[in-house]
Picture 1 (cartoon, helix red, strand yellow):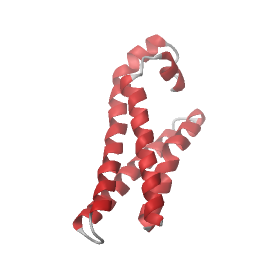
Picture 2: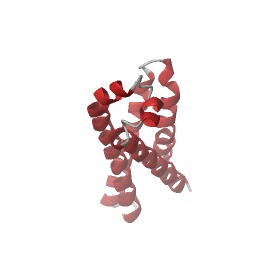
Picture 3: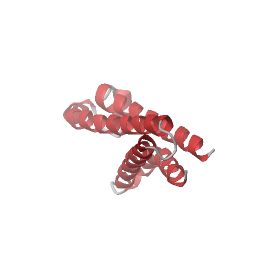
Picture 4: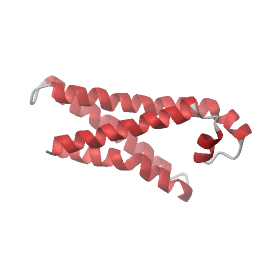
Length: 132
């Protein structure tokens, strides 16, 4: 049961990071998006677009790591190389998501809510995968 719940949490964390990728790398200059990230105005969104583009791909790559890890974990037999590699990749990717959320908390009090949104599912998935 724990591996299944861990998988759900990890998959939701991956989906969230894909959504963040879409906002940062594709939709960044739309007012509803840059306002959500606390950007002051359209000019600032235009200036920060390359940084957001890069950051979005970082989030996408973490999500891809989780997905590949989950596929390997579930397709490999117990204690197989695929299962171990899948568990390792999933833990690394979730840990990186969690680490990024922790770093975000050091940016100021206004970033606590986004950090909690970004880090809660990876934390749950990481702990449960570690225990599974």
